[in-house]
Length: 218
Image (cartoon, rainbow, N blue to C red; front, side, top):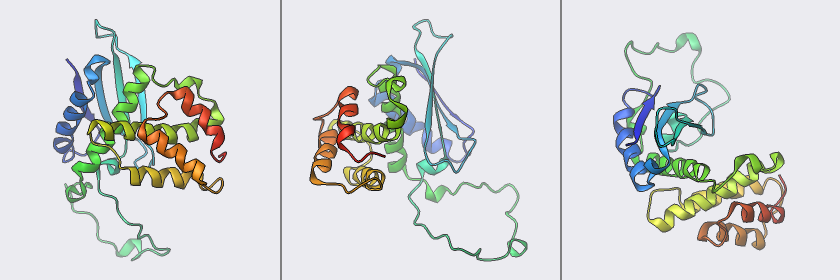
């Protein structure tokens, strides 16, 4: 039995999220490794990246893990184009106050496709951690960012091959480029590394660490 929880999220979001969380838990067989999994609103709603917390459960006779995924509600919404201007559209004192008892969450912005991709990606990462497919403490501090981005490619490539929701190769390639191109020109050899990460040619975390030396140093 696997306990599933949504905590601190907007009330309108949870009914949309719970079935997707159940689906991800089932397709990834999370009950084998986890006693409970929780999706929790991050205390910093503008935080760009989610983060995981895993701990041994004292309530489970099988000694499985309790996992908490802290994230922003934006993780489950459609991508919005950047429209921020330098000056506010109106002065603060000219802006109408929000109606009482009105939720700050816009249900129309919810995307089941992005929510499913997010949940499958993050919970497969948690499972990798639980099964020692990666060992976070063994990643050198100076390589954490590069390793995380490269392992994200591995995760979504695996999800794609399994026919499960995940981020597309186009989106993952854009993230990969955005990170490493800031440190140097990405050459054909670098893109071959990306393709190997995506296609499953590189799957072991030791091998991922090894290829980082061939990518632009962050």
